[in-house]
Structure formats: structure tokens, C-alpha cells
Length: 316
Image (tube, rainbow, N blue to C red; front, top):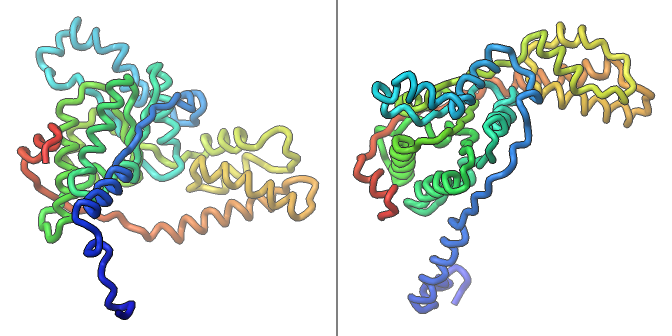
């Protein structure tokens, strides 16, 4: 028999053997192990405008101040379902959102459980919602702060014109997330580069949305000083860099210093020259400009509340 007519392996194996292979593969893929970690940053590690820092602290101090607000000031009577507290950090990449999430957890004296959509997504129907539920369960059991990075992948608008199984699965995941958030009574952090993709239903369930903008001149000056170590020989004019190069994130500035140092060493220079770091920085801005044509994709969806509840209870 020719290769093109080869009988599929599933036909050659006994049904029970084939099924066991499928189940084994499924278990291997969906056996996610969520592990909380100690926060890596403190609020003093992040260069932020004072208004952004104040917004973060307003929410981060929720745990310390909730007894006064809800019990002494009586808001437990008028805001019975507002004891859950979520914060969404949004803005361009590299502006410190992930660092801020770690800093908030450290400020609260708790570990952080960071979850990315890639960690929980599964090709098996119904498994992604289960993975989301498991993340919430682990956070509760370990008393960790749950942090969803790139949250627009989970909280995006639902699909109305569902044309295939993928659309249905996406809607199911969104609806389960909504139901879980309704009953979650602990602090939770989201971060996204694309807040415009958030479903309005999720927007309403998050108490505070904090915008992380690209640093202004004052912040850029502080960032340049922070990332240029005293040991690095240079003739860099930091004030000039801060004035001249707008549109840089903290991550961009960090990268510019590192790449300029490597470039100087490779060329045999004894120090990092102003022209060297300016050329590197210009290249970073040029690449960002080329990438700026990318646009977010928004959709919308509807799935029954009954399905969402069944998924929360672990039913199929």
C-alpha cells in the first residue's frame, strides 16, 4: 500500500488505546501549575508621575482602609457588592505596568500570582474556563494577589455573529470570567496595552483604571540617570537626551543605554559618546514608528448565564 493511502494510526489501534492517548495528551496540556511568587519590585523602584502613584495607592490601600470605609462609615449598607476591588493598569508597552503590579502586591505584603492568557488557553473545549477558575482558586488558597497580564486577551469584547466553534469558545471564556468576577471578593490586578478592546461589562466590574502614559521630560531625565551607572564611562548629556527624545518608555531608555554600551565596546571606544546613544535611541524610535500602524481588533459576544454557572461548578 502506498504512503499516500496509509491507514490512520487511530484505525490501527484498539479504541480504548486511542482514547487513552487522547486523554493523556489532554491531561498533559491542561495540567497547569499556578505558582505564586514574591513580588520583584517596590513602589520606590518605579518612576511614575505623582498623580499615577496616588491613583495606585488609593486602590492599593483598600485592604488597610476597608474596615473604616465599610464598617465605620456605613458603606457596607449602600455598597454591598463593592467589597471586591480590581485595578486595571493600561497604557503603552514598557511604561511600568507589570512592575507596578508587583509593587502593589509588595505594598500589600502578599505574594503575586501572575497569569498570562497564553498560560491558560487550551485547544480543548471548556478547558480554558476551567484554567481561569483554577487560577482564582490557587490565589484564594495561597492568599496571593491575582494579576492578569495582557488582560485584553481575556476581557475583550464578545462576539455577536458567531460563525464557528472558536467564536463560541471565546464567548464561553468571557462569560465564565464575568461570573467569577461577580463573586470574587479579593484584590485583583489587570494590565493591558489595549483598553479599547475591553468589554464594557468588564470595565464596570473594575473599580479603578489607571493610565500609564509615556514619561514626560522630567521622568525621562530621571530614567536616564537611573539606567546610566556611575561606572560606565561616558560624555552623555542627560538633559539633552531628556529634551530631544520624546515618545520613549522606561523600557526603551533601559534598552538604549544597554545597546549603546555594547556598541561602544564592540567598536573599541573607551567611553560611550553622546552621538552613539543618540543614534541608538533614534533607531528605537524609528522602529516604534514603523510598528505604530498596528491597530487593535474589537468584537462583541453573548453567552447564556446558565452556561457560565455550569462552568464555574465544573460541569460540562
